[in-house]
Image (cartoon, rainbow, N blue to C red; front, side):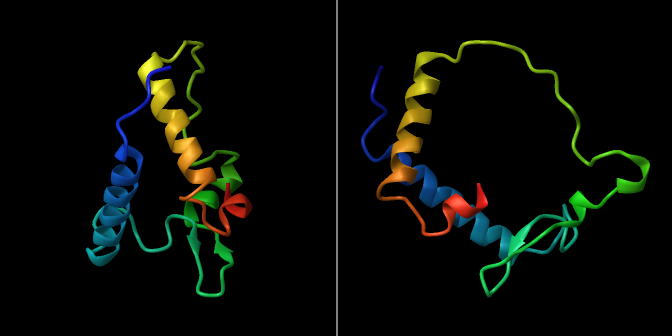
Length: 100
């Protein structure tokens, strides 16, 4: 399997973190406050409203997507493996196994 460019994983994670911080500082244009699950100051999780929407009509807020079997390209597998390695070693955070 081809190795992804050294440091690529960390750069992607840092950019995603910057984007998350920027989105938290911008107005709630696309989704209302409380729409998604979030972590509270005490470390507990608050469920977002998406989990409760349409519950009485036996529906969910997410579409059921058809599962199509397919083999990922080798470069996608390599990237996935590198992210997996990163998040299980130096990129690991204390609470990650409680949330995933």
